[in-house]
Image 1 (cartoon, rainbow, N blue to C red):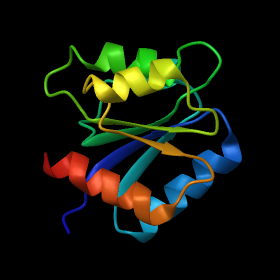
Image 2 (image 1 turned 135 degrees about the horizontal axis):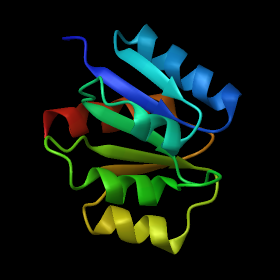
Image 3 (image 1 turned 180 degrees about the horizontal axis):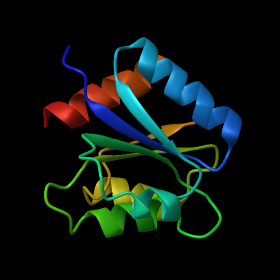
Length: 120
C-alpha cells in the first residue's frame, strides 16, 4: 500500500492517539489535531482522508465536512462518534461524509472505510 496522509481530528487525546497508532500500524502517515479549528489552520498538507470526531467543542465534525466540501481536491471525511445524531446521518446519506463509525471504534471497519474513501 502506498503511504497516504490521514488527518485525525478528535478532542479526546486518548482516542486521537489510539487512532493514530492504529493507522500508523497499517502503514498510513498521520497528523493529529485536537480540534477542527487547529486542522483548518494547517494549509501545508494534502490529506487523502480526514477522520474526525462528530461532537467537539467549537466546529463539529459535520461542520468540518461542510467546510472541506469546497476544497479541491476535497478530502473524504469519516466521522467517528459515540453519539450518532440525525444531522450526522443526514451528512452521511447526502454524501457529505464518506462513512460514519460508532465508538468504540471497530478497527477493521475504520480501515475498510478509509480504504474505500481513498480509492473512490
